Image (cartoon, rainbow, N blue to C red; front, side, top):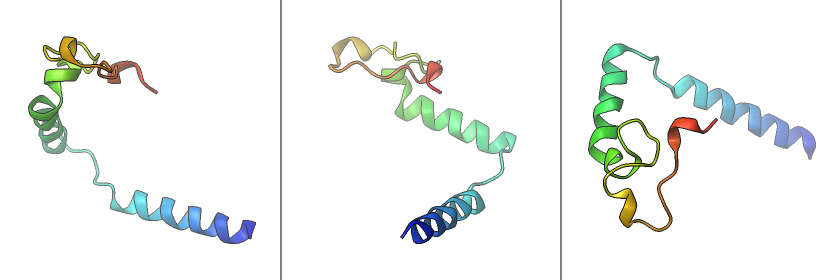
Length: 68
């Protein structure tokens, strides 16, 4: 049973790595724009959870800038 679980974990890890796009300046900019549109109102422009809409939310938005 352990062997099967191990093989499945390795397979999913390999698939996840294979499907991840390489970082390019265009991809980083697209991510930055997407964050600005969908996330910054609550999480703030730096991701610290201090966006303009954060005061009205319970629970408060996560501080994404300091998460590991």
